Image 1 (cartoon, rainbow, N blue to C red):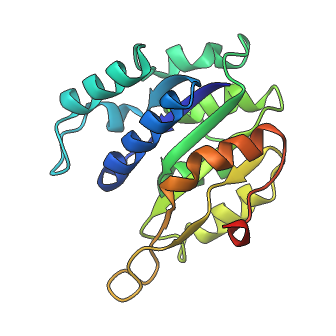
Image 2: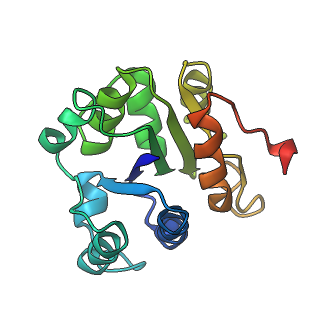
Length: 187
């Protein structure tokens, strides 16, 4: 498959996302990385953006798409079989649910979905059981959106926070490719 893999600003999950991107590439899939502008250019306690970007370039063997302008041709050129957004922050969930296209990632989704091709969402937000819940629900009811199984990541200290199981990203992509929703009970 040709897979577009998008990362948004849940920096604490980047190491898990990078491991999954490696697995996807090792499974023989063609992968292109797309990053929101903040994800592409922000140093955090989880790593320097230049190091993260270089790692992603090496894994994918391609330049990273990180601007709205560069993401727009994704749909017209039918660049990907599946587009995956993992981690997908509460901010990006809200934008996708409301049709806002002001980042490379939201433009990639808008451009890709116009061809009725699958979009896989890997939730990672501290507010999944708060304000972001309505956006998760909205996207779950949209055609061609598929969710990586997710769960609470720290119920005692972050009672509204949820994160996807990154080890199930590839399997969710495979299911989405054949228009099937992956259910947690399968695993």
